[in-house]
Amino acid sequence: MTSNRQREETQSRLTWLTKILRLKDLKITAFSFQQRDTELHLWVKPFKNGCRCPVCERRCPIVREAQEARSWEDVAILGRKTLFWYAPKEIVCPTHGLVQEAIPWAAPYARITYRLEFRLCALCQIMTQKAAAAILKMAPSTLSNCLHRVITRVRTGHKIRGLVTLGADEIAYCKGRKYATIIYDLDRSHVVWVGWGLGRETIDRFFNESLSEHQRLKSKWASCDMSRAYTGAIQHHCPNATLVIDRFHVVKALNEALDAVRKDEWRGLDKRGRQAIKGLRWMLGMQARNRSKKQSRFLNALRTSNRRIHRAWVLKDEFERIWHFTYPGAARQFLKRWMTAALRSRLPSLKTFVTTVRNHFDNILSFIERPLTNAVGEGINRLLKIVKNRASGFRGLEPFADLIFLTIGDLDIPAHIPSDLRTL
Ligand SMILES: [Zn+2]
Image (cartoon, rainbow, N blue to C red; front, side, top):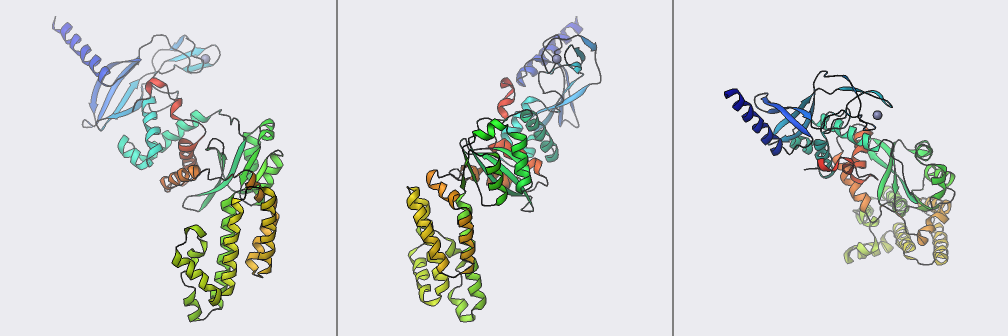
């Protein structure tokens, strides 16, 4: 009589625990607190009888009953680590052979439950992995590994679709010590590919591995910087794409030319002359509309104090007008006139810039037809900067690429976790 009542009591306690933990498709058979009460261990078992193949979900005969029990980490409860224990059965599927039965709470071979995977992804989308690890009571390296497994699993077999407008850019990681190439889908504002390295070899790898011939022919627009590697590869692989040189790279090159003039002058000046152009560096890089009246007056004063810098600066200010043209023909005329004026200035660094512009003349002017830039309304760039900051401690490309795909990738990673297990 007493043993019966005891059994009933235990049963109701387990049912209560199942409810409070919001567990579905599984039954708790026992539980215990371990490691000085910091861990809650649950012995569980799938509800549905009949073991299924994890690949085709077919019901299959059991070969071996119970093997060694293994554990899955679940979401921590009130700071307590929670672990599921179960001994998965081995089954034989007519198609897939000897496999481990499908587990309703976790992906095959995963060490953590779907629930924890979902929370992990959701947290890592908004905070650093270190902060997420602290909340989830996991070691940062474990968390990084788990995240990599989820993202790899979801992205395996994924194909890029409908890429019409692509952007290629380089990105520094590892505190600027290493570089990777990143490919955007500029119509949808997300990243479709990340590969280590720079240059032609890397971008060739993207075109050869990730796009079919049909897809390559279908791309209509492409944006990139002025490097031969990118422009050459895009023209070679996507003959139908109109190339638009990323505006920011053109402006950057011009600003560098302007700064070279300043440095040149600085070297040749005495103490008093240097005093006159002190603090000029960032003022020269500013856009005309962002300058204060005082700053403009200072720059205008250069007309008498340092003619060479003044000339270079006027040319730079003039150049900015190119981005506001509506008619390609007018822009073409303007740019030609500007190039002549720049050459007449006889400033060597501006001469180099003119050569660069001449090499990419048509592709710079494509901007008038379609104002395309890799920044896409600053949306991607802003997110990329955040991801980069969060990933500053990482050594390799993999964790960095993981974060990029998780935050601005072309696949919604958390959406691939079974919907009833997407609880926060
Ligand atoms: Zn199967």
